[in-house]
Length: 119
Length: 172
Figure 1 (cartoon, chains in turn purple, brown):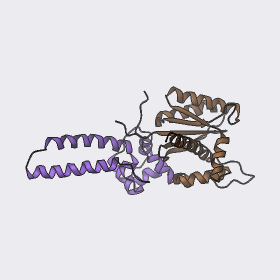
Figure 2 (cartoon, rainbow over the protein chains, first blue to last red; figure 1 turned 90 degrees about the vertical axis):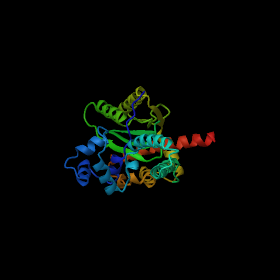
Figure 3 (cartoon, each protein chain N blue to C red; figure 1 turned 45 degrees about the horizontal axis):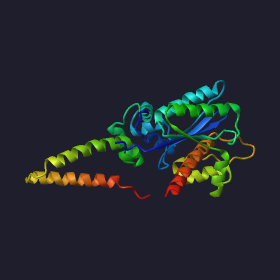
């Protein structure tokens, strides 16, 4: 079975604006092109700083630029959200009520993301 | 659970290397480029590069030009490279699809694009990311720009999308 590497669109965004790896690294705040090269070749995951810098530069959220990493984090977080949601049911405290509101809104947003988008 | 979208890798072999386009199933290009190979052992170097791209992107489908007897007539070296690229993909469990140049021309003629340049423009219109790469219109005294290969590869990928959308319509 082939090992599938997570897709990222960093190279795609760089190429569509005609930027070299060095130019992009410079714009994102790195001296050398190596970081861009390593992320494009999937040798290392993107750093938080790079994700934020890409959002500022391209206006693209992390979920679009790094969809697989974003999706795997979402799966992990939502599993814990569901677990906590089940655990705290029936507790009448005000604090728990706030927690339930938060978890329900997170579940609602996750469901919203799963719906096919109209192009 | 995997949320990974399927990806389609199209390669167009050229006299000096090859051009490639990798798209996801929503036709958004992930990677594209031209690999320039000159001198001796062009095929070996091209195959090393194709292998590394297959390893990096792990596509689901590889689209190549149909160079069989009924397909497009190309030089023997390029036919051999095409065959070995298909073998490489096969070894990695990647499905291989082939389309001849005649099929591509026929399909794009229906869209009103009858020259290579018009085909490139038609593709760039639908895939704005590639707009920057459309070479200037070629004059009779100019040799073909290597970047045109990107659009030849994109046209092959386009044919694949067209064929699967046809299959879906047939199934419906």
